[in-house]
Image (cartoon, rainbow over all chains, first blue to last red; front, side, top):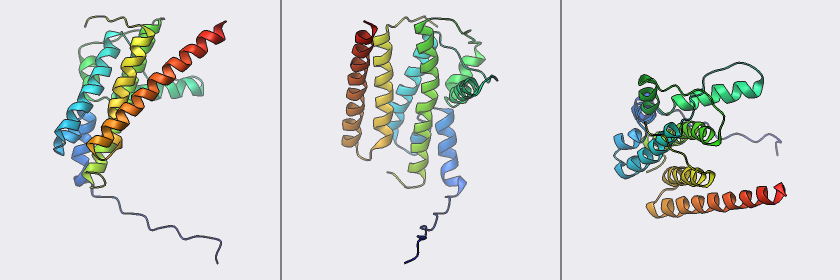
Length: 140
Length: 61
């Protein structure tokens, strides 16, 4: 018996036109991917959860993290936070467009707000992954 | 945009609710499983919230 086991053949990547529009819309509008794929109920729930979290983040005067150099932890936190904010999609763009620029101030409520803003983006990533799996037929 | 000031508990509860909702929706395959899993996640969030709260209270002396 050979010590090296054969790996199962890797599944080919589904074509971009199958999943691309759903994932792009899911990024741009929270729940939009599910809406495009006719999962209206789930689309509504995702929109509600992500937008609620984002709006409460704004109302708690959370900060939009911007890329910032420094030590490794600082870089991971600020670059990661910035990416998460951008992944929220259109709510982030609208807030920036309307000039929301809360400076970093001390206080538990502001800190919660910042975490809410970042988490809204992370929840939208989960929605994007789900939209991808539905689009390629892995899930119903 | 109105300013909202939530307590630690309210903010953590709201966070748990939104996160559980998304986890329930994206994780399971049937509506019943989604509902059960969402409620399960929310319950665990609340249990951990109270657990950590008491741990911090007792650890603080």
